[in-house]
Amino acid sequence: MAQPALDSFRSFDQALAAAVTTAGPSVVHVARGRGGGTGIVWADDLVLSSSFHTPDRTQIGVVGAGGEGADLDRRDAEVIGRDPGTDVALLRVAGGGLAPARLRELDGLGVGNLALALGRPGRTARASLRAIGVLGPEVRTHWGGRLERYVESDRQIPRGFAGGPLIDAEGAVIGMNTRTLLRGCDLAVPAVTLRRVVAELQAHGGVRRGYLGVGAYPAQLPAALAQLAGRAAGSDTGALVASLDDGGPAAAAGVLVGDILIELGGAPITGPDALRRALHDRPGEALKLALLRGGVRQEVDVTIGSKS
Image (cartoon, rainbow, N blue to C red; front, side, top):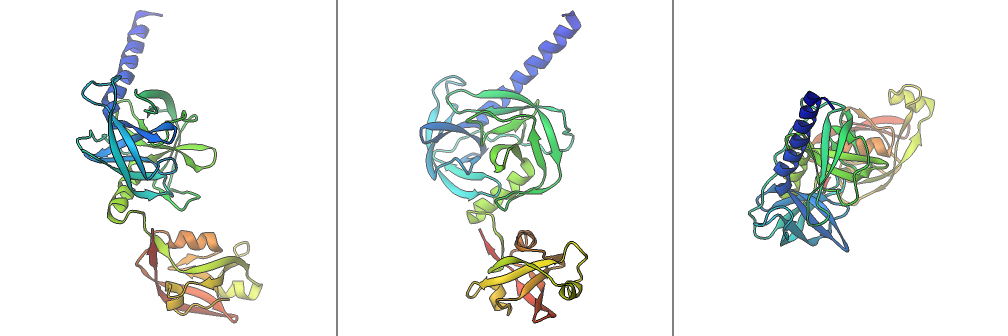
C-alpha cells in the first residue's frame, strides 16, 4: 500500500476509534433476564433503551472510575415510561451522575455515509461498522408510532445492540437502534423522534394518541353512498361503527352503531387503519366528523380524547 493511502487509512481508523471513545461513556449495559442489552444515557439520571426488551425494574451498568474495560458501576433502574410505537423505554437510574450522549440531527447525512452501531451487551463497549442504507420521510409503525424520518443502516444489528446508539464519525448519536418496529428492518429511531417521545414519557408516562372510542370494520360503499362521500373509484370504502365506548368522544358527539365514518378533520376515512392515522396526533382537538347514516351524509362536532 502506497504511503499516502496508508496514512489516509490510519487517519480513518483512528477517527473511528475516537468516535467510540467519545460515545462510550454514554453507552450503558441494561440487564435483561439472562442476557444483556444496551441503553443510551439521555440525562444525568435518565437512560433510553428498547421498550420491547427492557423489564420494568432492572440494573444499569455504567462505565466507572476504572474506565473502559474495568468492572461496571451497577445501578438500580426503573422504567418510568414506555412507547411501544417507537420502541422507546425511559428509565430513571439511581444515583445520577451519568454522562449524556451528544445528539445530531439528520441534516447533512446521506445514504452511503458511514456510521457505527454501538452496544454494551456485556462489560465492554462493542462497535459494528455500517453504512446508512436508507433515508426516508416520515413513517408510521405497525405499533402506532411515528418516526419523523426513516433511518436504516445497511445490515442487521448484532444481538444485544438493540436500544443502543447509531453514531456518526464524531461520536454523536444519530438515533437509537431497534429491531422490532418494522418486520425485517433494523432501524435507528432518529434524534428528533427521541426528543419528542422522551418529553411525552416524562410528562405522561406514555405517548398520548388520539382516541375516538369506537370499534370499526371496513365498509364498502355502494355507488350512491360513495358519491355522497365524494369518493373516487378505488377509494369507495369507510369505517363502519360496530361498537361505542360508553362516555367516549364518539358517543358524546352522537355517533351511533351502524354509522359509516368517512371523514375526520378533512382527512378521508377509508377504513379502521385510516381512522387510526387521522386520530394519531390530534388528542384534545375539536374536529368535524363526517358520516353516513341511513343513506344521508351528516357532520358532527367531536372533541378527540387521548390515550397513552
